Image (cartoon, rainbow, N blue to C red):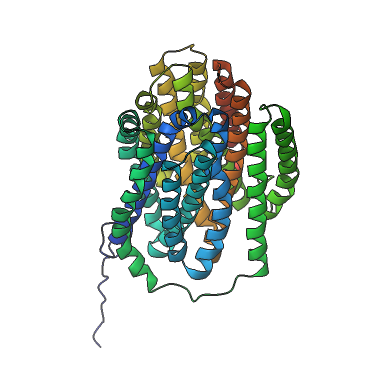
Length: 465
């Protein structure tokens, strides 16, 4: 009897350059690049906008506004993407992005700028969740770390040229031009992403009704956003005097009383105590946002007020942020790092680098070290952010069942938004208190608090297993 032999067919390793994966990779990176340009441009010119519109006391509110609306957007987008697929929230996010940019570019006063920033936060929340869910359904697990690394790399060019270009545009054409240019960039980004979206359309789940729990979660997220808005605006009004100060006190107390119970409902059980597993990953997302986001938001304002730099020069801090964040993400995406450095260890290293690096801006605020030294330490924090952020993202997907990937990702983003909104609002209250003269010690206190959050993350990283 003849013996049958079988020849094994070698299996090629998945690649982002493969025909079935390349459309998504190109389109997603293009969209992230657009968001990166917008982010760097806004942060560069926001101190100038606040000064020109006489609204420096609302700088904290303008900084926190996207985080506040992001809370509601992610809660909606998570369930929306799980129930109907990621395409609908993606379209809605792109539309809100355009509206937010137009509102800021045509704003007659600082409150309108804050409103435009709210629209931008809604857009970011919808687009971020839609991209992550789209990636989880379009790519195998072994390619996800590479995509997150590509997302970080997409920030390099905007971080290198974006701040200087935005600063020069603001100085030569006026700050409004910075916002009005951005909507035009949506067209090429959408054109590149459209093939991947069309390809994904064939595998969308059948539409299903939202459960009572999901509707309750969205309503609770709205309550959290409302509480954060009350805290942020109330803190900015506390120092305005007269009836405005009374309104500020009332709003702050109401926001605080609403925030604590609402947050407990909107987050999965165990997040507030950083319970082992997914709750700890979500909690660490909040600490990461508080540690790095707080310092990054106030660094350009510190450079313009304490050191007297013009917008284009102050934007160099954003260049350092993006370049070294991308470098850290590239290190995270290396095969050797993925194989030999477990996620918990990567998190400990990343948070520790942030805790050390943010003291560069703190010392720079007090003018105790030269500019190059302060930004050099900030680069160390950027590496830590680049290592920690994608680690949390991949760990979240690895620990989450497919049916709740959107909701768990949304919960992580909500936690980050809540912590960053609260810290930005508190820092904004300090700025409003000292306006129009902003001393270096104020910024040093803000920067040092970021280091404390970084240390807390390094301590709690072991629970993210």
